Image 1 (cartoon, one colour):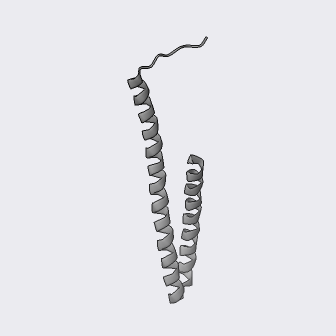
Image 2: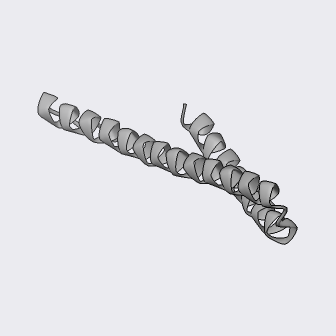
Image 3: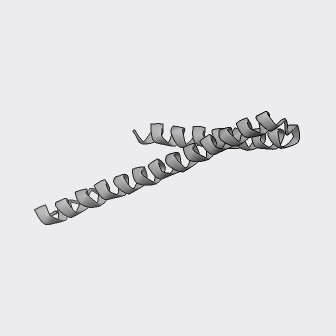
Length: 85
C-alpha cells in the first residue's frame, strides 16, 4: 500500500537544503583528501630527488615505496571524485 506524504513548501525547502549541504560537505572532504595526498606525493618526489643526488640508495628504496603508497592513495581519491560527479 502506498502512502501519501504531504509537505509544505518550507518542509520541501528544508529537505532540499539538507541534501545539497550533505553533498557539498562530502565533496569538500574529497577535495581536502585530494589536496593532502597531492602535497604528500610532491614532498615524496622532492625527497626522492634529494636522495638520488646524495646517492643514498637504501633510503631511496624506502622513499620509492612510500611514493608508490601515496600514488595508490591518490588514485583512490581520484576514483572517489569520479564516482561523485
